[in-house]
Amino acid sequence: MTYDNALALEVSLSTGLRIGDVLKLRPSDVQSDGLHYIAEKTGKSGVAPISRRLADKLIKNGNRWWCFPHRDSPRIKHRTRQAVWKDVKNAAALVRSAGLIADQNVAPHSGRKTFAVVDKAVHGADHVQAALQHSSRSTTEIYSESDKLVGIPPSYRDNTEVLRRLNTLDKKIDKLTQLLQSRIVSGCL
Image 1: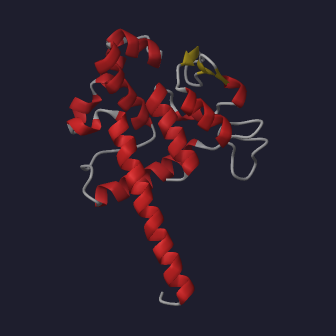
Image 2: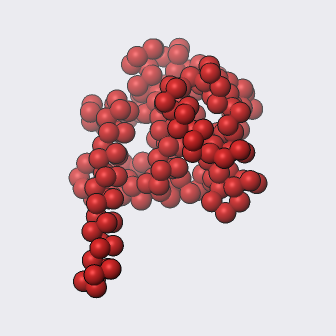
Image 3: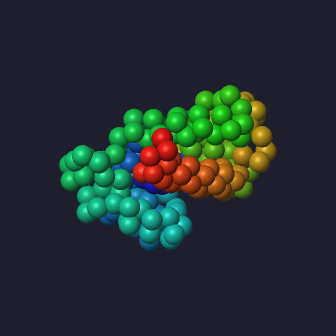
């Protein structure tokens, strides 16, 4: 995945925010008490706590206008959900082909569901419902029990393990890319 898209997914995994709300973040939304946002789907405002490290990464990633600027129009637009979706799907296909995950649907919204599973285990169902801004407990249960619904192995229930594996895979992809580039330059391909 590109750094921007991986960072957007990390923010979703850490906060439970929808990927569209993550991509709309502005540097002024990153404050000492967390990410200040207005959910596009519901219009509800909220504050999602994040680590100082993640806040710093968001500020460094962005420009004056967006934490995730659009590649072609960085002053006018933020990165699109479709760009992240495509990158997540490609990364999931690579991970699936390596046999690291089963045939399950992985998408940017998986970050929100993974957050719910982990947050429920740590803080309980009420906390998850508040964090996801759900008005219905039954909706929250669909998210917080999603690991049981799709049969995610226990090692993937902790988002730090998912991030560690993605980081390892990213390093392998970098090495393969360097090897291919060196072969192209040397005329072997």
